[in-house]
Image 1 (spheres, helix red, strand yellow):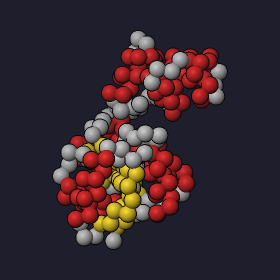
Image 2 (cartoon, helix red, strand yellow):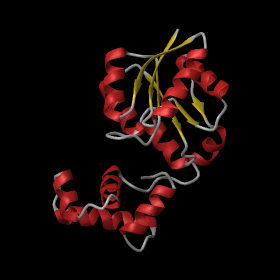
Image 3 (tube, one colour):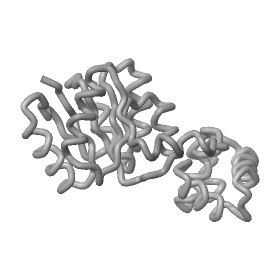
Length: 200
């Protein structure tokens, strides 16, 4: 049996995914999480073969969860299941060790087959996104992305500095770098461009 934990913050989708996968005789959904931190805790405790996770979740994104599990030395293989058909997200998912990246509009049989492939040590990547993923590299550093994401959430330079334990001048420098790299006029436009391309 392939043991699966599902992380998805929309309860209807979470229930539907669990029901779909439970139909498969060789798949066993052993846990369900609605937030990023809950997913990390469940995977650490239950030690599944596969974590099937959304990207956008409260607390930690699916990409953050994958990175946290990698850093903890978890043997669970991560498959990102998302609505975001953006090559930037796929590149970041692969960078943090995800073994699969599929879109939610894929047929359920394809999802089950992808889980089997990843559990056997392979990869399962949406083929259309795979072709795009290497066409435009992400220009942002992790710190620039963090600062830009917090600015996009409406935090002031002072609050960003306090949250990230940086000086306000350093925060301004990171924002300026990000704006320049993205060819944007200001932080709002920079965040919009980065989000559209899957870099935020």
